[in-house]
Amino acid sequence: MIKNKERNGRMTDIFKDNRVCVIMRNLPTKDIKDFVKAVSEGGIKLFEVTMNTEDALQQIRLLRAEFGSEIFVGAGTVLNKKMCETARDAGAQFFVTPSVNREVLEFCVERKIPVLPGIYTASEAAVCLEYGIHRMKFFPAVGVSENYVKALQGPFQEAEFWAVGGVSLENLEDYMARGFQGVGLGSSFVGKELLEGGQWEKIREYVSKRMKEIFG
Image 1 (cartoon, rainbow, N blue to C red):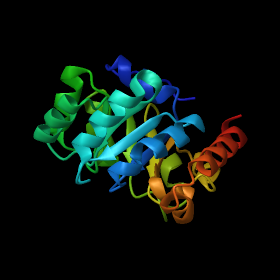
Image 2 (image 1 turned 30 degrees about the horizontal axis):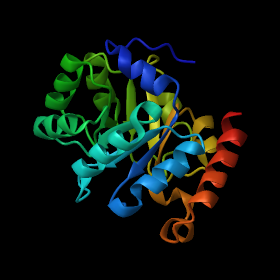
Image 3 (image 1 turned 30 degrees about the vertical axis):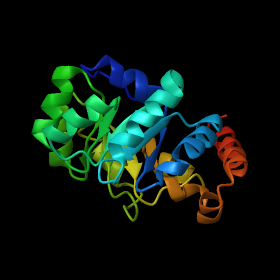
């Protein structure tokens, strides 16, 4: 296990014990509580609402009010400081970015807000480490050669990379074997039929089964 040295203690707490984050982009607000309840009861506790979702701030507020400390609710696709401020005011507990933005990194480090910056190259990873941020979102992870991440960890041994893009509960173990420490799953990972059909109990059962098989 890679040693973590974030300046941000809360980041370590959130991401150390939770290796799977569900990314909710354009999930209907009418379904979001039932979906999160089913998935969280199945064993996943990190949920990211992307900021380019029409009702993103409303959904963040709704989830924080409904679930309290049972889950962690973050804001994704955070592009700038202004987005950080509005998401934080809505109750977001962590941020996920699609790229490395120094303004966002500074905002998060100064306020001790957990953040997973999006990276793809060694140069981008080096910038994150400069800010004391050791966990990063690797995007897009789909199609990356099996040895790329392990090679990237050669010069950056303290870094942890989370795979986003092309990951599901069916191939999660493959990504972990390639050196990733965590993953982000799109909300469609449960299957379009179950999701659109509102089959929440089947979703809960599926998530619970796979999480136990993967993590014990």
